[in-house]
Length: 453
Image (cartoon, rainbow, N blue to C red; front, side, top):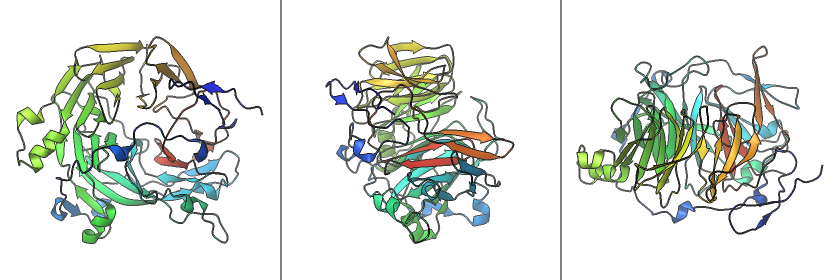
């Protein structure tokens, strides 16, 4: 097949980007990726060193008690790749190497067990052999439903799973005598049990601080220690851990969460409001000054009506100089709000449908969102009236990333992954990560590496 046409990137330097991703989507090779954007190593160091987690802040659960917090037990779902005949199964809380079935691919399939609503890499981990992925969602994969805006009041015992994944090239390239496999398969390294309900959204701060929005309407701020440090005191870390701080609002639920640098947290609410807290000052008052309920510190620094209905996603423009938020919601609006003048809203896109996802790459001169036709579109910031279609989908888009297609055959109770999908019209995209993740309602999480032949 002939190569797709060469395209110019939109970074303003007129550099010609050769589209060498091949004519089928196998994922880009690592030597084609460019490190762009913010280097997390340049962020301020030791920002939250004043937060100390003590052994008495944790409680070790027995296996019998801990299982009541994990997703409901169910039989494994059969999995088959599009060009393969044999199926395989992944039990709950276990993983399976993709290369065992597809020699040209490196990656894994993890079984979270419930419906996946949030998964996030822990940032700023220097060792590729110690990458941690947090996964949260519902206990059930198909039977659990939560109406928007109704706080969860029953079955609040839930868990956040922390998986350890070795992303080093040596791990991917290792071969055993009879079968190609990995040195260290991903493992469920720590389970954080809590009583706040299902997980709607979560995001890491670059300092081991995890913000999570829960089914009971609150946001919990967790300081997550390394699992190995927990084992020194408790053995296997199946722990009950309370948030170091809780954020909540009256008459509404905090549905989404986004870090504005290391010191601000914003939430999009189910009633269309946006609230922003200076979480750094709040935690410093608690841990340094021993003051817990000072209204001047604990109240939101900004609170505004932003949308006419629930907010599906909110993101900041920069992790180092956060000044603007970008949000979308079920009113079909896409708008930017400046932090210093929150009453002025710049709505530059609206559709007659729910708008589910948007991203604001800090290294790119524009934003990406999904429209009502399930098309991922790009808007340049210097011309907000013009959009460019990037790629089309045949189902709802929950996040603007295309890697493979997945189908489910109810009569066979089988999940089928489709590879070698023909590329649609696209432009060059830049990413500095070396592995990507995706999750779904069935509880299966797919981790793909760009290390391949």
